[in-house]
Amino acid sequence: MILIYLILVPVIAGILSWLAGRLYQWMPRIISALSLVLCLILVILRLVSGELNDSHWTAEYSLSWIPQVGIGVHLAVDGLSVLLLLLTFFIGLIAVLLTRESKQPGFLFFNILLCIAGIEGVFMSADLFLFYFFWELMIVPIYFIISIWGDSNRMKAANKFFIYTQAGGLLMLLSIASLYFIHGNSTGIYTFDLKALKETPVSLSLQLLLMGGFLAAFLVKLPAFILHTWLPDAYTEAPLAGTIILACLMSKTAVYGLLRYTLPLFPEASVVFAPYGMALGVIGILYGAKLAYAQSDLKKLITYTSMSHMGFMLPGIYAFNQIAYQGVVIQMIAHSLSTCAIFIISDQLYIRLNTRNLNNMGGLWNEIPSMGAMGLFFSMALLGLPGLGNFIGEFLILGGAFRTSILFTSIASAGLIFSTVYALKIMQKAFFGEPYGERHLKDLSAGESLITGIFVIAVLFIGLFPQPVINMADSAIENIAIWIK
Image 1: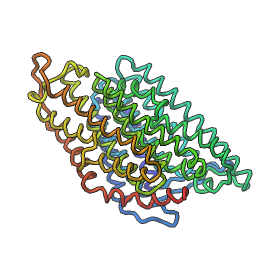
Image 2: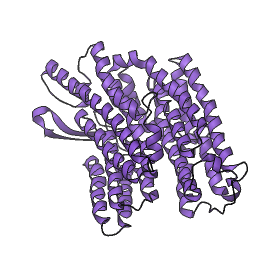
Image 3: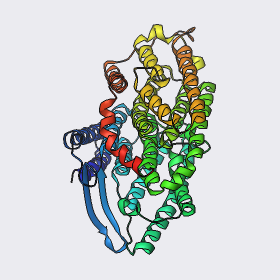
Image 4: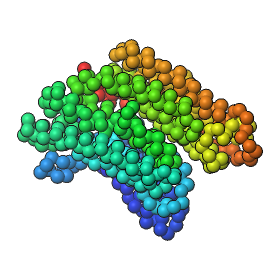
């Protein structure tokens, strides 16, 4: 029942926050933070050191829901899921603590918690109907977060995000329904259970067609090149909590979907698509880096760096070997932590300067040296400095992808050079150079120092001791790789 509790706690806390917000503006934050702390404790105490059962799950819950049509509540987690649940609750807690919007606070925290419930549901679903339900559930709260609490162009950004993600989700629903009927016609058993659908006999041409629906949903959310145009508007216009959830959690649901669903359900089609998938990833790496360097808006610059680094996921996924998959897992965690931290620093600068324009900054190191040091650390994390988490993830991905395609790996490696350029641009424009006018700024407060310090420790730990993370996800990685061999 712990898997049910992990979903119910944020949902119930979200409803309580909404109701409590009508009485006291400070109460929703307290309720939301306590609920996420409780979920973190539950995962750490009950799931982190769990043993795998016969079905290779650490924990599993199954309940017949609508047996007439084969719909059930089947939740299950393994090491990979547990890692992503820990990440979800931690990043969610940070988003709650740093939320400063005062308009309708109860409804805001309700949407944050409902979105987190949807994200964790994606990471725990072992039933395709349930997976689609949670996939759609996390879209609506983010739409409200952007459209109500976003910046001046929030409605355009929210509508664009909703149209892109909804269109991709509907195409995935068509593929799920088709797979359901194909399995039923061939076996006489109509079910959405992932384990059963993996065994469905499907021709290569039909696999390619069905896989296209899943790819439409996952590549939009990643986001991959061509399907990324909603990204700069949504990330930039969203409030800090929305940006963190989009960049650090929602994008990881796409990577998880590719690993957990696309590869096992369509192994032959995945092999055929692999060169195109790797090419999309490489283009995304270089294109995102180019656009990042061209930006003068700090938040938009960081947005494109996120797209560039997420591009490494596709060569890793379609390399079809364990080293690359280990890199994908490390990169998911490290990217979320470093990107979340640099977005927080960007927001702290905006609060103090009331601008995100890098041309209106400069010379900040002398005024706010602690923030400058944090900015330098996470800029180095973005460019993949050895000893930090991003370096381990990208190094393993490139090492694994080299075995599959020397050409794509060599081109992708150039992204590491470009990341150095835009990381140094952040430091040069914002913290060094000539000061822009006379300012009297406050450095990091004790609370801000504590939060960014936690991120420093986490990124350093993954960079220096990645093996515990790899070990936790190793059995899941092996099971995914089996379907391609």
